[in-house]
Length: 202
Image (tube, rainbow, N blue to C red; front, side, top):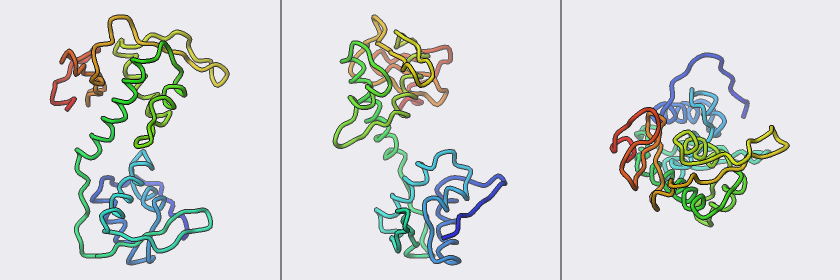
């Protein structure tokens, strides 16, 4: 299937993804994750992939072919069907598990690099990628939970971090608020310069 290129602002969100899936099924006989990604404003291809896989797992779409590069082409089973809904709890539970694993690992290591943290925090059930570890470490460091033992120097020397004294507040992982600051679930207080609410962290 030819790659679709667009240079204008486009909508995003599950309803839009589903609409594009239906249209490409009708017009081209199917679509790939990349096709839908190129037709949206979503910053993350992983977001699109997750929704496509959710549609596949709920039998709303089905695989039809696999290209030479391994890209799978799908088609919508019922063109008149409604867009499958991904419950926020599903995403929040997955994100929460990743953060819990990272936090537990941080509490158990004297110091760590991002790569070491991602490897140690991964389990057979949930893999922690370096990007997720890096984002969470950045948020915790900004909130004062982590100390930089050695700053990173480009790709030559990875940064080393450790938990700050007195900030091992308990087993519940600090949550990232929508305000981009951190809520401590153990103390039940927001951390950082901008305050949030407990509902934000739920």
